[in-house]
Length: 106
Image (cartoon, rainbow, N blue to C red):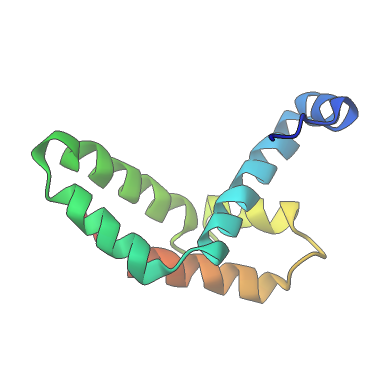
């Protein structure tokens, strides 16, 4: 059964738009940590082979790479702010770069 968001926490995030964006970037990073990059790369490659989805998939991969593909890219900086103290920053940055490097270029 899905849990309902805590009203106080949700209101806190809505009242701080910058934090919401940083938290979203940390969510992306946590998905990277929980996922096998080889599996994601293989699935992305299959999607890139389909004419109906290739353009959107290539754009999405390019956007992901722009946000998370370099140690000091915007998404990585946002995730680092959101996860400050919860994860070593060097590991966080290396994880994002390694994950995006494993993905196909569309």
